Length: 228
Image 1 (cartoon, rainbow, N blue to C red):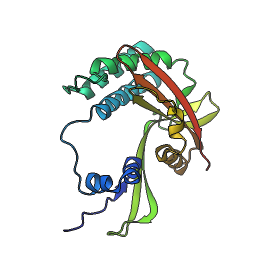
Image 2 (image 1 turned 30 degrees about the horizontal axis):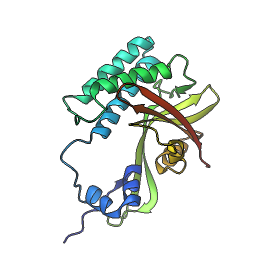
Image 3 (image 1 turned 60 degrees about the vertical axis):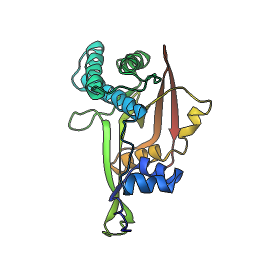
């Protein structure tokens, strides 16, 4: 059997899959095998993230009023959602995610949120911060540096004092140890490293969780600090 090519690019999701199960990494990321159906949790999370991104751009870059910015974000969420029909038992419907987006910006109003996007030199807010960094680890076949890549929801300034990464997580409910899940999460260590690589003094990550229930939403916020 011919060995599949090793990926030229890796991210935190791939590394988490390898840590959890080497076979999962092999079949998912080397053989590129995946279920045919759309994962409803990933789809809902992606739609929510798109709504957050567009709302922030509309408010912080285009200077729209909060209400208009949120409406623009809702339209982006619906466009992302498309005609996907989640399982009947899922609480993460399109309507529920629209409600979650509205509830998020009621809980964290852009006009008073202490975490605001860092503004780049080109005038763009640092939302959907994407990166691709060559590592010191060489690809086993090409001998070129393996690329470590990712995308954080936002590099933010906290009350004009320090920079940090802000990332939103949707969930069905909060476990008792929800805040502890992120302490050694490679995803956020990687985000902070990437920000430092590009010259930003970032050693903190803020994880904002929103639980999607049938009739209401819950919010939790956790701050993690990492060494240089």
